[in-house]
Image 1: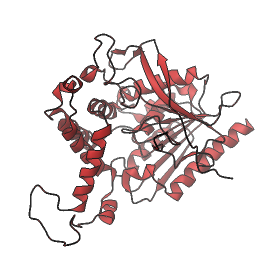
Image 2: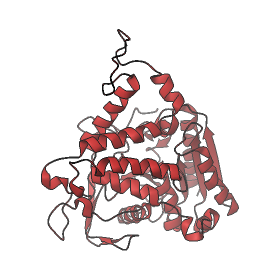
Image 3: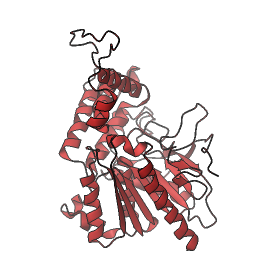
Image 4: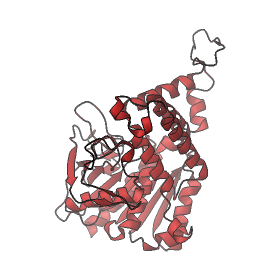
Length: 382
C-alpha cells in the first residue's frame, strides 16, 4: 500500500561550536544548521540519503509543517514515492548563509553582536558540502547510500563525490551542470544588481534600518523566473493574452500591466520578496557562479572526477531546460565515462523547462523510482 505522504514533520537544529574553514580563506564561527529527517535509520546506518536543496528551497524537503507548508520535493520523497521513506532515511539540510533557519546574514555575528548582513562570509558549494558532512557524521552515518539534488542541489551532490569520495555510494544529479555558462553568470549578475541598487539595500545592512530591499528582490526573482521556464511553457500558459481578458482592449500604457505574463512575473517576484533574504540571494547566486570543479585541473572535468569513488551516478536532464541544458549533463556523463565510472543518463522530453525537476513527470519519476529501487535492492543483497 502506498501512503499519501509523510504527514506532519518537525524541523530540527544542530549547533556546531567548531569553526568551519571556508574556500575563501575565511571561516564561519560557531554555527547552527536546520535540518529534517524522514523515515528510519537502519541498524548499520547504511540507508541514509541526503537531499541537497537549490537556490530558494530549504531543509523542508517533504511532509507538511504545522502551518500547512508542504516540502518542496514532497511529490518525490515519502512513503511509497520514488525516494521511498519506508526504505530510506532521508535527510534535508539547510545550508549556511540561507534564510530558513541555518546561520545566515540575518543572524548575529559573534564578533560584533549585530546581524552579519553583508559581512557574512562568502560561501561555496564545497563549503556547504563540508557543513553537511559534519551533520551527517554527527547523526552516526559514515557512508550515505546516496546524495541527490536538482539544479544547485545537483552541484552539491556532485561535489560530495569529489570532496568526500568515500562517503557516497550513489550520486543522483538532476537538471544541473559542471559549471555555469557566461550567460548564466550574466543572469545572476543582473539579479544581484537589481538588489544592490535598491535604495533600501544600504550596503547589505538594511536590517539596522528596519527595511527590506523588496523592489530589488522582486526584479531579481522576475529575471530568475524567466530562466526557469521554457518558451513553450510560457507560450502555452500565457501566450500574448491580455491581463484584461474580458474587454481585451489595450490600455496603451508603458507602466501598467498589459499582458498576463507580466502580471504573473510581478506576482512571483512580489511573493518571493516577502519571504527571501536579499543577502542570502547574493550569497547563493555567487556560490552558483563559483562552482567549477574542473578549474583546479586546467578545465579538465575528467581529471576532476578521477577522485570519485561512488559506485554509480545517475544524471537526469530535460530537453527544454535552457538554463541547465542537457548538453551540460552530457559533459558530466562523458567525464565519468572517461574515468570508467558507472553512470546512467536520462534525458526527459519535458516541456516545462528547468522547473521540470520539481514537477510530476511520470517518465522522470519512473527513472528516479527505478534507480532508488536498485539502490535499495543492492543494499538488501549486500
